[in-house]
Image (spheres, rainbow, N blue to C red):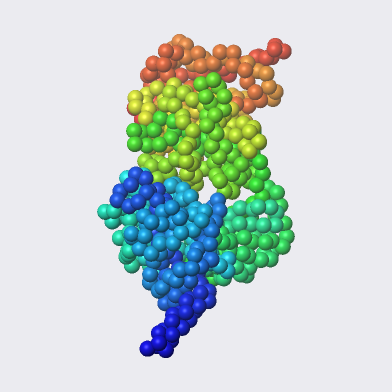
Length: 573
């Protein structure tokens, strides 16, 4: 009997040694439940914790394993054997007693502080290898009530460990979570979606980072032969970056040139962690970013008075030939004393804005996409805590990383079309990228025909005078000011050989009576434009008919010139 006991003890010791000797592969142990925001409590203790599950057929001793997140890593886990298909709760030492009531629990020193809004959480083996990583956000709850606290995030399918939001949800258990037990949301949820290349950016002339929508097979992603570059750029090496494995670093053999846009291509050999090969989104533009100077990026459209269930947005546009990194741009407003305030960085990571591209800045992209037609769904940038913009008037300020104002708009609701009774949900659009931002004549209410907003694409009232050849030109010659997006106002464009001319513009009806003094002693540059909205001097609706636009210009040297242009005003079109 004694020999039998010794034999059993020896076998037990051998089992522990065997478990300790096992070196885990990726995803053999996964993070399956996260309590990031335990307050207000539902029924579980008010502690932060994570749950680990062994998805393999092997036992692993967790001694020396660590939990980490963006700001640091925990102390080493104690001696604990995690058997196949079993779980363990990991938390700080002060929470062990409370959490032991729900299942096996181990403590680590410096347990990560889990951010309520989102964090990058990873599990690291003693060999320094990342076994699993979860970049969660509060959107993963898919429930506005539960994301406010007291409910855990649970993984649905433990054999689909790297699909992100598609494989996670708020716990449906009445207590708020299921630590130490099978997850309440457990289900078969295989990953069948191809990975997508989201975007790319250059850290310098010889290094590029590619960003994907999900973790990749790190071995396939680390083969340089699986990538190509335009313009004869050679790729020397590739590296799939831990802990999330959704980024690839490329080392180039020859340098990128400034103010040049390149295309990087990913071979279909690259796959996600479950073996799905690259899909259709396998190319991205990239270039060397430059710091935005004055008017390199302009404010192009502003929604400051959204619908009751809507959200503000600011659209920016890059009219320059520079590649601009939005990590180096900031959005702000002005305080009541006129100081630039509430400064918000557009992106924590490098995110490139290419020449002639738009980008829509908002707190709630989903709301904007639901309420307006957006032609480029990739041109949305979600900001947490966008600066406040009042419904009547305010300042939209765009700054670069040195604090220099790149563009600024002091808007006023009076700039909206006077025929619009309800201005909620109606954006103000810039008419000409090259004209002065602060000129009220360069802004107009978005047209009815586009749903009162054009996020991510060319404005409904966009017009430029770049092709104008005459000294004074009007367009269109037939105006129908009903805010349908077609010929809603008349643009009076001028072009002179030198600056310093002063213009007086008067609108006469067919009987020769003045009905609108459009401009009085307006100082002109070499080129520019004014606008007539079809209204009379007292903002009254003028009847349909033929109108004469008389423009008299002069300068201080005594040069004078007069122009007459005819426009037809049509009501009811």
